[in-house]
Length: 603
Image (cartoon, rainbow, N blue to C red; front, side, top):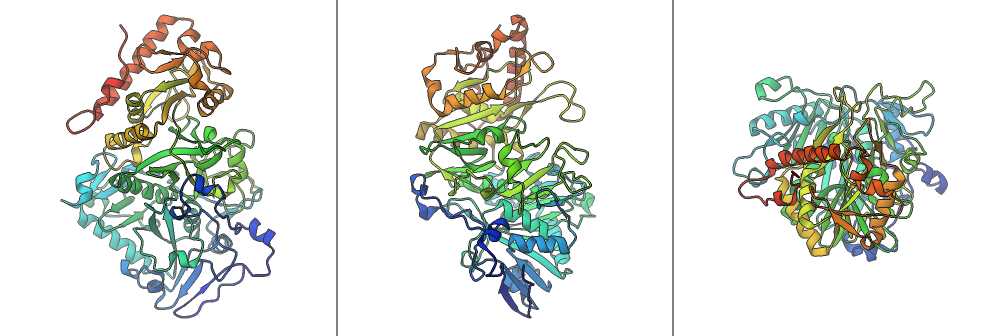
C-alpha cells in the first residue's frame, strides 16, 4: 500500500493506489459486495445495511489517519478522557492493517494462505468469571438484569477506577486504533459500536466480525451507542481490594455506555461483549436475540439452528443449496431474521477441506487465525492442539461464496434445536409443540464426551439456558416468552435434532452418521417430514417419526436400537431426571413455568 502521510491536525483518507488492478484489489480483500437483487423478498432495502468490504474508491473510504494535538478529538475519543495520543488509525483497510501488523511485529503471516496469525497468550478463550456489569442502583439495567453468576455486579466506584486506569494507559501511547462500525443488519435496531484498541490485529478482528462502514459518510458525525476500550496489556493489581476474582476484568457500564477490558488479549471478548449487550437491548424493544446460525433457501424459507459446541450447528447450517445468513448471532423482529455480525468466528480444531470445506476455504488473505499452531514453514496445523483446543479463525462473511448478501431472512419456517446426546436416549429427530419448544430452549441440553475436557471420563449432561447462558443478561424465561410469541405469531415449526449416539451411550452405541442427520434436516427443510406418521415418546412427550427416508428405522426409534430394552428405559428415566433437576431454576414467582412440557418419569 502507499505510505501513510501524516501532518499535524490533519487526516487523510487512505486506500490502494488507483492504478492497482481490480483483480488485485479483490485478492487483497477490497472488492465491494453490494446487496443482492433478491433482497426485497426478505426485507425492505431501506431497513438493511449491506455487509460489504471497504470501497474501491480512496475518496469514499472510511479509512483515515489523524495526527497532531487534535488527533483524539478528530477521532471522537476525547470525550472519554483520551486526549494525548499522537496518531489515531481509524477504520484501516485490510491492506493497511496487514502493514501495521507486520511493522508492529504482532504476529506472523501464514505461508499457506497469507492470512495473519496471532497468539493471545494465556487466555485462549473467554474469562467468564472476570466479566462484571456495574450495578447502578435504581437504574433501568438494575431492574432488568439477571444478576448472579453470569452477570456479576460491580460497584460504580470500582468501575470508575478501572476506566481511569484504561484511559490513563492510552494517554501514554504514541498511537492507537479506533474502529467505528455497526452491530445488527436491521437499521431499525442497529447499534453503533466503537472500539479503542492498542494493537492493529484487534482492529483487524472487529473489522472481520462487525458490520463495516462502506464509506466515510456512513460514520460521519458518528455517535456510538456503546464504546469498548480494550487496554489488554494492563492488569488490575487492586483486584482483591476491589472484590474481583483476578487481575483480569471485562467491566461493562450500561448507563455510561462504555466497557473496559483489562488483562486478556483474547479477541472473542470484543465480540461477545457486544452480543451480551444486544441480549439486553433488543428484548426491551420486543426483538428476540438468538445464539444460533441461520440460512435461507432459494424460495426464501429461513431456518434457525440453535446448538452448543459440538452439536453440528456450523456444519449443518452450511448447505450448498442454501445461503448462509450468519453462523452465530441473530435477531428476530417484525420484519424477519437478521444477522448481528459482518463475519464468522469458527473453531479450527481438526479442520480439513473434506469436513468443513466452506470454513477451510474462507481461511485466506484478510482472515485471521488465533492460537493456531503453525509448522516451521508457516503452514497451519489444525490437528495440533498443544496450545489450545479453542483455536479460532475470524473472517468477513463474504469469504463464504453462498452467503446471503443482505444478511437477513424471512420469518423462520423452521427452528431446529441441536443436541449431542451421548447417552443414546434421544431420537435423531422429534417434533415439538410450542410448550415443548420452550422447555427445550430453556434447557439447552447437550452432553460432554470423555476426552473433550480434562477430568471428563464419562458422558456428562450439560445444560445452557437458551443455548447460550454465558451471554444472557436478563432472565432466561423472558427470552423464552419472546420466542414463544414469535413461533405462534408466524406459525414456525420447532424440532429437536440429536447428532449424538444411537444404540447405547458412548462406548456402546454408535455416533449418528452425518448422512442420517442430514436426512433429518432435509426432511424438515423440504417439508416432507410432515408427511410421515408420528408417535409420542412416553417420557419426553415429543412426537417421533415411526420411519423417515434415509434413516434406519432402529435409529429413528432409539429404543429399537438397544439390545437391552430395560437398560434403555432406565437410561431414559435417568436423563429425564437430569432435565427435571436442571429446570427447577426456571420456576418461581413472576416467570412463565413450562415444567408441564418437560419429561415425565415412566414407572
